[in-house]
Image (tube, rainbow, N blue to C red; front, side, top):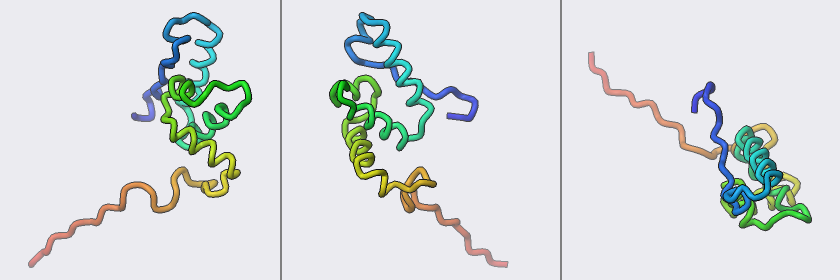
Length: 112
């Protein structure tokens, strides 16, 4: 995705949105997915983890259908929030050392 492209917005797969039976619910799920499309990876899991912990919240299976996030991702967000985001770096998006290792520059043996 380039800087000029719009981020992809997940289409809710819950039965209510599929049948378009309740416009208020369809609108709310769409708004949640629009917000998620603008957040970073950890922010998405924290937000959905927070929503999944609310008293009147649907279960994890419903949040998987609504957001497209994996169940383990939502649980991880809940666990990180419960720990007060203590193990999460405040500045970096990923932990130090995460991601692909740096590529070594290949040098050829040069003979004059």
